Image 1 (cartoon, rainbow, N blue to C red):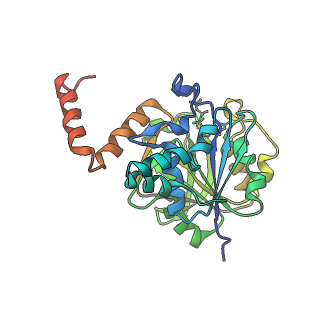
Image 2 (image 1 turned 90 degrees about the horizontal axis):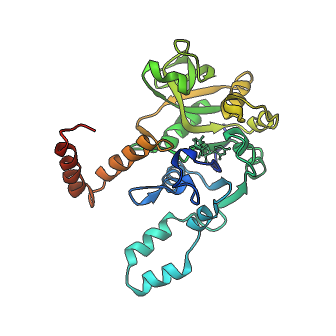
Image 3 (image 1 turned 30 degrees about the vertical axis):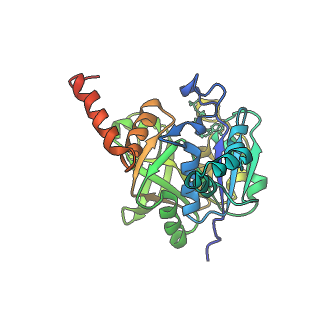
Length: 296
Ligand code: UTP
């Protein structure tokens, strides 16, 4: 019987330099796609997958994330007084239950691996999910829920992967595909940012993980990797020597909201899913595209 995955880590301590000046005084994870901050989408995805405790690793300027997941008494009173019941109830639905979330601080942005290591005391000796809030995945069933299915069978460590064009793999972590049915397979190896033409596959690591707690022992070594940062992929490569990793080609579409084009496209894609917005929005979008002959 595999140990249950009850907790999830959300690293939100990065500098978000690609979005300056928007992220000068506001965390990247509070940027909105339509009308919800990025962090809310991933928390919802984790909740859908059965996660019971949410651990946020925050940094400077991140108190707004704590406020977002807290009750705003004055705002709620005003909404009630004005009869805005639907808005009031929607706010309440987004909140974790009392005691269901914890915050810890990464004192310096030393890399994703370091941010995850900062959560070790709050996670303890149990498997956990890791979700990168700047990766949104639009799917009929949440990506983490799909990974939980694979975990129920395979146990160990699970990584979400997606296919990209072969000439783009040198910017990502790439997996070496072992035995499996194509959708779910054993991972034989991983390589971070392979030199062009050397990638073992065109399946890249996509920002959703289920990891065993032994990863913390490896992260504690605090070895720096690509970009002088402590990388989670380096620790996973070490862990792979002793533990099983399974890759899951999830159903869904990924948006890299850490980049400006990815973030903008996410706004378009999510707006088009919304019945209250889509018709007018689509008309306007078509008008913009046709008015300049489809050219940028
Ligand atoms: P990124 O590398 O995409 O985020 O990290 P960044 O460093 O904030 O962005 P740029 O490149 O400067 O624009 C992916 C996730 O890991 C978190 C980030 O907050 C983001 O959610 N992260 C990254 C940390 O929590 N700590 C770090 O030291 C680095």
